Image 1 (cartoon, helix red, strand yellow):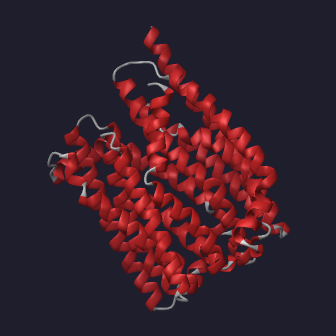
Image 2: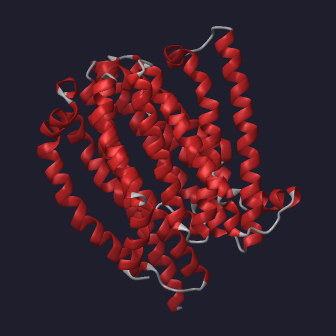
Image 3: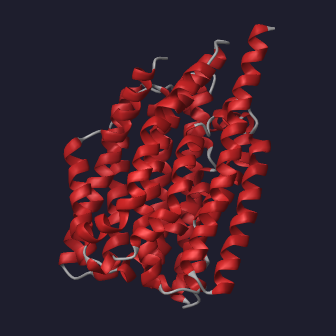
Length: 418
């Protein structure tokens, strides 16, 4: 596939509705003046639990939709994932209600208070949206994914602004996020009939789940470890440092790693589908991936260099004096952002070649390094040092993963010439 095609399809996923993107961008100029760094610190703690729990709600079965042998199998595994998500979300709701009603919320949950009740519905809406998005991904309906993503972004932004202006304060950020995700979910569901999916029974779903058991065994485990380690600053370090400082880091993280995550997720979706098709047809794919990485680095390196020097004045100018100090966190995160953009764009490789077990080992090393980094930072009482060590540990593992992904593709192509 030509680079123009990859970039075009990825651009469709990233951009989507231009008006919605403009609303989302403008919302930050308003939100950072309505909500304080302390509010954002609490919201980041809330959302970190969502990112961890969402992995268990589907056990990553949505990824199996892309590599399923035919449409019937894809439909079967999708229905299985949807049922699993509903079951896990219901269980979370019961636990959250019990802890809240008995006033026994532990750790950071105590800071959230009644907002823990928003976690189960958020997990449910995120889980179903992920399943639907991979169904559309299998059929190359990238425009539909982009529309739903932007429905989420625009609805969330507008709701947060309205709630903030009404004086809802800290609760506005998580409430707006849940409402935005619910709107995105509804948009997916209303248009699902356009895929004309074959019917799948419960027994079909169980067979498909057994066939693709590597996804819950290794991919879900890997993603849990990766997500857990990525959220350690909020899940662990936030217990020992000022919440406003955590909020400054959270905003820096949003504008540093979130764009990377959006771009890499879009590139991964496109490359995943194309590479899986090429492997099924016994065709080479290294040249496409190599050209993609060269193009990506040619753009990303200059952008990161500019961000290093301009981050602090840009943050203060755009969001106000209360956000002074975000720039140093951007600088700490930039090396991780650069190598992570390349590595996570190729994360699908282990799924294509069923090497999830080995990949799992890389993420075990990452969590061990990040736990050590956080522990050192906490012991020294320096939050900036904590984040710098945490980001460095992640960057080292991401570089190793990138090399390993490319090695697998090269090994596959060697088998084509034999």
